[in-house]
Image 1: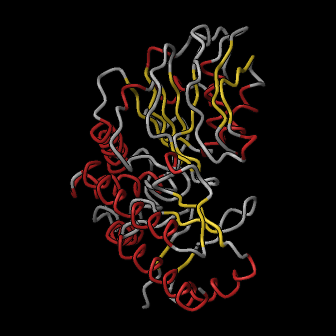
Image 2: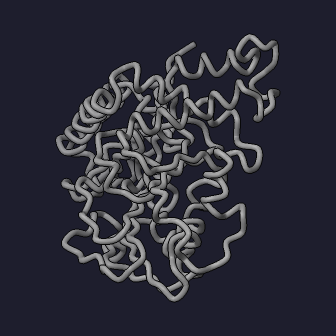
Length: 357
């Protein structure tokens, strides 16, 4: 079968060995003669999967004691609600930085539960940079940021030191680089970019920040409910958790976050070097804030798009078109995308310059 170079923004590429193990488990899991999709989530076999997945998260993040790891459903969009519902006190205030569509959606949901102060925003400049030099109000209940913005291709390179609990949506760059994860009181991430298939959302929360809002929280929306039930208050997304576990095992076995950070840096440097060098293209993001995960760029002459599209598709490249709200191109270079795929795309861009330049 011909190689496809998968630049999809999500659901995204997964490691081949992970897909092979997952495919085998769909037919026969743990030699039970039962599919992974058929076993009870209360069985010892799946409880071991859930425990292993939680332990791998803590290993990769190098977290101290006092954090709980959850695998929930509803995507990051549900976390926009749960974060505010669990952390924003009655009559309190939350602080947010607005760096893109998903940050904006999180702000909208938080306003349902109380006052929201947007401490900085790059919306007026079409989110082409990450705001800096802002002040986090010490009287807010928490500060929320989004580490990587898939639609616009920006990424926070240095996180602020926050006087209040810091919450981060890491959906599109989780486990892609080394970070001091202990700076955060709550991290959430949809699995479908770097960690697994769509269907589960990772939540890592510092236990001491919970139970302080003064409001009644429905059981299904209360982090404490899910902590007490080991992420199995209701039937968990068995397959998505299992594949996430396999993906984290793949990371650990190859050298962890130091290993994947090195590869991701190489991919990003190669991609942006060609965008900057090639006279037919230009990047849309302030250079210091360029995402390693999502490189967004445009053709200087939009009339050339049909010809360029034909070339990259013929080269076996998939998923390169930009988000429908911004157009252009977006090369999503998540963990499992090999350096080879970026090299193929760069060669197509060079060949297109040779023909049209």
